[in-house]
Length: 457
Image 1 (cartoon, rainbow, N blue to C red):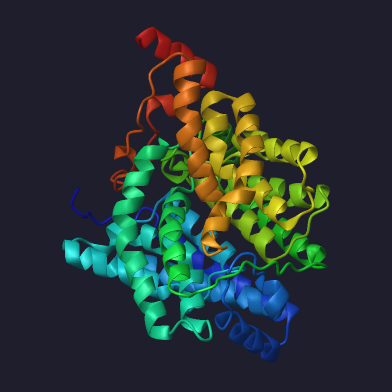
Image 2 (image 1 turned 180 degrees about the vertical axis):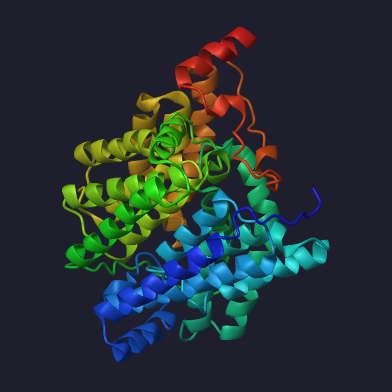
């Protein structure tokens, strides 16, 4: 489809910049300016493999300042691409701000973005067509940091070259992996990045590299981070109810309709329901993630706050309370019966990022969400080993494997109907001012969807 100018969601740019400013303000509240600058230097000179909590190595001020810079950079790239904004733009901002608390920094992300820009130039297409892929492919930014900074092996020029290569190959690969997962894994780029990492990391190791995983995990920050998250979530809920030019009762009605969707990708909630229900959804989901960590005895730090911000971002694109809670409960049950503790850092992250499989819960029902979360709790702790912690979206890779396995089995064996590929046309450029609903199968209950499908067969 040719590019068409659309300003329906242009007002999000100021919101993104205000959000970035709030992150910087929070950094200044928690740390002195000199400590923030020192922390930023520590961050950009770190190798960043999982789990490297920037709050641990650079302090809360340095971590939040890095998040502010990366968020502003992402907003600028979106703006310069001239691509019309939609719900997935909110996903990108939430994900970039979250992961810049533990792995992404203002230096290691831009080579990948530049690589995707080069891909668009070679294809003679608009960069805006691939801008979200460019930004989300920065999941492999630790590879750039490792190659550029590792003493005795890498070199900054090699790191730049690796980033350009990653950015160049991700658009075609991610388009292919999207089809494989049938919209059941929201972190499609995580699966694609995992495949690239499984190729690059063994190649690096064969050439003499020796990347190691880390466990840098901050403790003692639950109160300030918990307060900030609660204030942000409540502000979003209040904003959705009273400050989106929508009557509060209409905002709640829209949110109730949103809760009836399956979340199967692509489900652009901003396009389907408008700002008010999406803001309410983001606030509610953020409170759920925060409560989950605190009630299970976890820590709010860089990685866990990053996970909560990611959930809030995907609240505009597939996640809501009804489809994330069963999957999170499945991970919790897995921790109860398997040989690891719910308090382990990796398990805490699995509890948050398992929500990539929310569409399985929404599409097939909550029992299958429990199953997906249970299996994810075991698989995610093993799939990161081949990439040595250099893929930040490790849960997306695990979720992709489970989606590829579970979707055809549940569809064909349990439900007795033919697997169907998800139509991607709904993700085209927005051309209408009023909210536009997703295809009909995305706004009915799973039981009704099964009955409808059987009638068609």
